[in-house]
Image (spheres, rainbow, N blue to C red):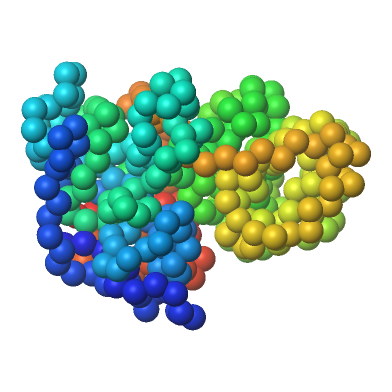
Length: 347
């Protein structure tokens, strides 16, 4: 099968480790399914894998990618009770856990000590013509939801959903500052926040990206500079936002802590700009700010996102679409920071 994989890791140029070529098609084990991938999407997670940064050592060749949607091709052995029929349209829930600990039984897989995402060893990734996944991780996809839209959901939109509504606890009438204006999680936060009746503000160093945020529904978008905290506080009646979603890290951390209201929440789903900003613990404890890490979400939350697309309430922002064999161009686009939503690979 055709696959996009890391043929090496590390070095100064992670994209030099990217290869598109033929690898063996996986054979499903009992309880697992083989999915014929029709669309997949890229994430910064893939760049980190090429750098050799992962939850487990990466042994090339290693297939990249967390997100995929397609059709059930086969099962390893007898399909589990209630499993989707062969040929059914599905989106893949990319988190694989032990399945029997207290967290798994409570449908809170992020608390499982065995938590792994697709493309984290020993799991192969989704940027291929076929991906193997536990049968329980298949989420039904209605006919009116395109494979491309569905492939946007499992990482970026699921992370945004949980950041906004679970970790930050936002409700209609509240406010949020989304750091970064055009990436996958940021655009998902803007779209989902606006849909839920939340006032959204955003930031970017790029004027065109700030304009995009406003077009997507942000109340206002600001440059990343020290004075912006004062502007955000002014826009919220002198209080500050109820929450900040900061996927950037070092370049925006000071602004996040200054713009959030006393008693507010700063949610951290990533750190694409650097993982070690000055903590400013004095500001955090003196203003009773909660710092909440988050990543991904549950199967139930993924089903809710699918339903939002099926009803027409949500349409994920797709910035560009490439064929699987042209993955190198798609990765170069992501690495250059020219994101306008999600980048899709069609298989």
